[in-house]
Length: 297
Image 1 (tube, rainbow, N blue to C red):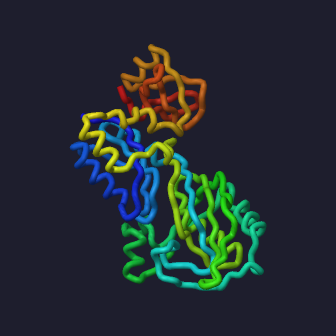
Image 2: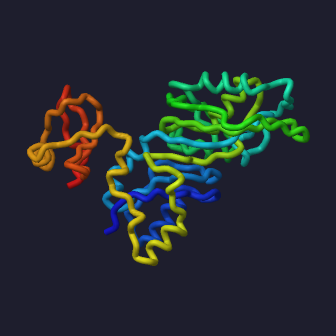
Image 3: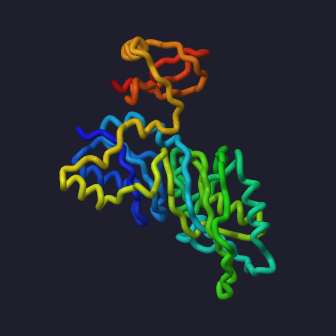
């Protein structure tokens, strides 16, 4: 059995499910999952867990993420990105908006914010995905959610298009899981007084994995053809966002039997190590007492 984490660069036009399907064929391994869905129009880091590493995939999904993208002011769309139909339009000119106004608005989103998921999303309401309602032309009330924006800033000047009467600029954002960057782009535009949409997006970081070292499906295929599996990262990469604790030999034995141990911590979830090896995922039961949720030895 093949075990490990793959830092995959998902390409535009492919769903996250497509990427997993292709990897199952390339690796000839059924036990594969991804740590955080990417929209088909978005490229970038898609953490992949293979074999035993699938046991920590939920913690990869929980990890924070970073993106680089582009926002266009001037019109909004049904999907909140470039793929949708225009639903509202308002011409933009240099006299109407400047960099300082946008920067001030972006700063106001840093911290805990409330988002309403877009209709074109995989969030389920009454057992049905929102995009299924949207394709039927039905708009329903969506439950809001709390997300956290760690950093949100403009990374380019403002580019005005006289022909389309729009304004574009690039941005970077670091955020918690569950954040819709499309919705963030729309909400920012609204705060600036304009309909807007996300016109480009790349995920540059997820679960501690970064785009500069990500591999395409073709890269992975070449490694496998050469019988070189050095591209597989250790399972420990799957818990990079969890607080780590070192166990004694006695504690490792106790954990292996599923027993509760006492630790000088009160974090709700810990990644327990023996030297550099991940031993277990521990959950807090009462003050300083931890029980193994998943034992990996």
